[in-house]
Length: 425
Image (cartoon, rainbow, N blue to C red; front, side, top):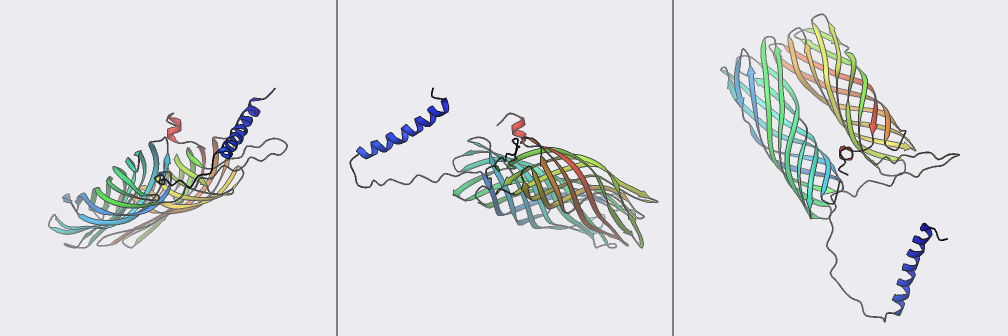
């Protein structure tokens, strides 16, 4: 009896043979020329690009004995972005985008009779995009994390300076048009709410509440998709599952952090070594670009208490996160990787002359190993070092704060995206 598989193969062979025979019976004709089919745009894949636009901000300040003021600086800006799109259905795509912008959002105001210049020279976002495509057009909404670096300088009535990193959220919408197989242009609006920071230096209060709105034009170049077929399954005495690392994942983690917090308040130095536990969530995407090499991107957020108190000085890091690239070497179900990118942390601290409730921005790098123990699940162990640099404040005396944090974490990843969990794919 002919098995179903044999019947299918026989049918394919019969179709091929009858096609050849029919072609042999057709008289020879001259060449027929037809218009080439139009280029088909696929939004799937990685892209890089540049952008420029116009930004306007609002910064509500309280400085020195309850004096308040509102700044509304405006400026042009330019920057770059990288991202990835993944097709959920014929018309829907989901993706991520990371950008950095450089501006001159400076304004000089008078608060309580004191001349106080404000400087905002850099900002950026890491966002998810969800879009609807129709032909070469992509309409999308976007949301994620945002950051900005600001500085406040009091040059009247005595020198005062406050460095202010800000971290908050971004939301927006845009439209992108593919005008060539690998090129697209976009128009986008992004609103960033960068929250409040509160600092008291030598009795001088500095509270800030910052928002930034931007409109921008961008140009993107899309590469060929890096996604590669999964590595083959190897067999020994019994079959062994082999992971194909390409795809999205979401997960949870827990770990232990330790670091250093070095401060100078006037001429009084202090050094603490905060320690403590934390837990959090992560999500990311991997591309297996060859049999052994994997590249990816991952974002995570953690909450806990990495703290230490010594006398009148204390530090408590209660939240932190990263946005990182990963490069790994896969050996069947094991993935060894290095990683690096942007890091942020929120900390409350008290020193001799300074009380701070603010964010820190810096960079991170580390190593990890991940084991895919089933088709959907993997576990990882990861070490990260994050350097958040030095914040310099001045109010008659110099007050500095330097922070770095090292973390060791274990994580569990479910190798699917949120849309898989919601049943949308």
